[in-house]
Image (cartoon, rainbow, N blue to C red; front, side, top):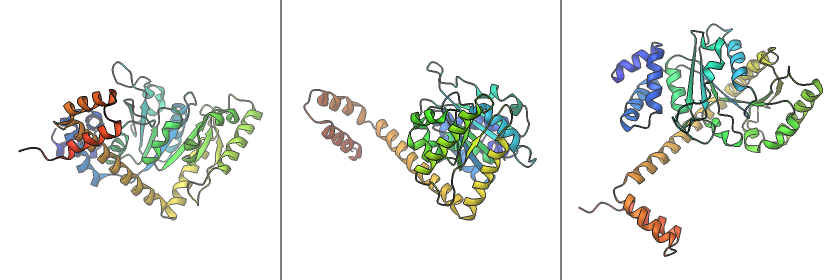
Length: 328
């Protein structure tokens, strides 16, 4: 399909076309990247107004199970269309996803108003895929107004999720007094609320202690938004406890930030941050593709190893070669 046909199919709800466009976005081939960004640029004017939700937390906390329960709650409103973007660890051999979250969301995956797309992290730090933001925009062009992004689940490195979603829910296991010792300040600071999961499996006293520990930690942290205080919600995807409360919390958050003008302001900051990051990436690619760099890099690296020049001087010389105009 040409670009115009791709865009027409995506915006009309063709899931096959959406999946093919996402595959192009995630490809590292230059021709695929060129085609993908042509499609994305044309899709921008067709995007649906959406709410982007990030779900993060340590491995084993039950992210996929909670997302399924939350998704079913969201779909109680027939106007909602839900896209779930799951980020899985990458296979060292194939480079593809190795967990397959779609298989663990059987109820959601069978619904026509739901689109689930697992993506490999491709070794990208931050708990997301390097192309997650672009995939979100394609999903919005396809008419999905609620986007859930599930991170890999590796802890502190997951704070990049803040640069692409509106609301972040941090999931913790019961026994959060101990759990909080292993969670760095960064991941707690970006959370807009906290859900303690698997309440059906834990002793009531442990749940109460976990709730108190989380609330104490939140009080000690600087506020992300002056108008919003994160809540701690006890939840169970099995019994349904807390699921309706989580969805209400997300909606309340959106209402409060929109009223203060912070919702759109946050989106603009995200786009600016993404733009800067992509400029850095394009400069890095151009640098290493420069005809002078490959040979000079090896030569200067050898001099650095032999202590003939310092690493700083070697780097300066290499950048000068990159910036020097080619000899005619």
